[in-house]
Length: 378
Image 1: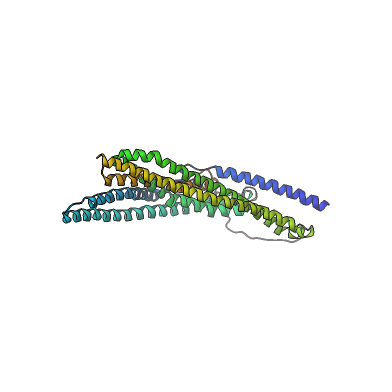
Image 2 (image 1 turned 135 degrees about the vertical axis):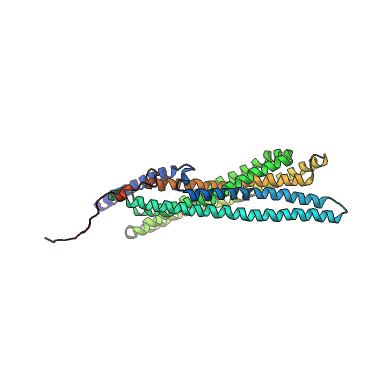
C-alpha cells in the first residue's frame, strides 16, 4: 500500500510539473519579436542582399500582370479580321517578342529574388547560431541545473533556427512578390476597365471568405487531430514504460481501450476533414466559375456599348482575379514569418536582451598558467 501511495503521489507531482512546463511553453510561444527585429542579425552585406532580393521579388510579381496585358493585345490583333496578312503577322511577331523580353526579365528577377533572400537567410541564421552557442557557453552552471535542459538547448538551436531561416529566406520574398502582383494587377485593372475592376472587387471577397473559412476549419481539425494522436501516444508511452505494473495488475484491456478511444477521436476528425475538404473546394470553385460567368457577361455589355474592347476586358478580368489569388497565396508565407518571429524571440531570449555583441563574460576571469590535479584517498 505504501508503494502504491508513493507511486500515486509521485504521479501527481509529475503531472503538476508537466502542466507547469506546458504553461511555460505556451507563454514562450505567445512572445514574438518585431518584424524589423527578425532581421537584427543582418550586416551591410545582408542589407544589400535584402535590397536586391526585394527589388527582384517586386519585379517578379509585376511580370504576370504585364504578361496578361501583352497577351490581351495579341488576342486583339488576332481578333481583327484584316485582309492584310503581313500586318497581322507583324503585330503578332511584335507582341511575341515583347513576351520573350518579359520572360527574360522574369527569369533574371526571379533568380535574383530567390537567391539573394536565401543567401541572406543562411548568413543571418548562421550568425544567430554562433551567438546562441556563445551565450550558452557564457552561462553559469546553475543555468543548466535550473532553467535549461539539454533537450531545450538542442531544440532551440535546431528547430527554431530553421524557422527563422525559413522566415528570413524565401518566405519574405514570396510575400513581397505576391503583394506587388496584387497591387500591379489592380492598378492595371483600374487603368484598363474600371467598371469590371469594381465589379470584381464586389465578388472576389466571397471567394476569399470561402477559402479563408476552409483554411480555418482545416487548421482547427488538424490541431484537434494532432492533440488526439498526442493523447494516444501518451497512453502508449505510459503503458510501455510501466509494462510490468500493467501486467501485474491485469490492466492490458483497460490500456487497449483507452488507446482505442483516443484513436476513435482521430477517426471522427478524419471524416470531418474529408467533408470539409469536399465542401470547401467545391464551394470555392463554384464561386469562381460563377464569378467568371458574371464578369464575362458584364464585359460583353461593355463591349457592345463601345466602352471597351475584348482585349482590355479579358486583360482586366485575368489581372483582377489572379491578383486576388495572389493575396491569398501570401497568407501561408505570412504565417511562416509569424512562426519565425516567435522562434527568433526564443533565440534572443537565450542570447539575452537581443544584444548580439555582448559576450564580455567570456573574457572575464583568471587564466591559470599551470594546473596540477592531485587526488588523495583517506
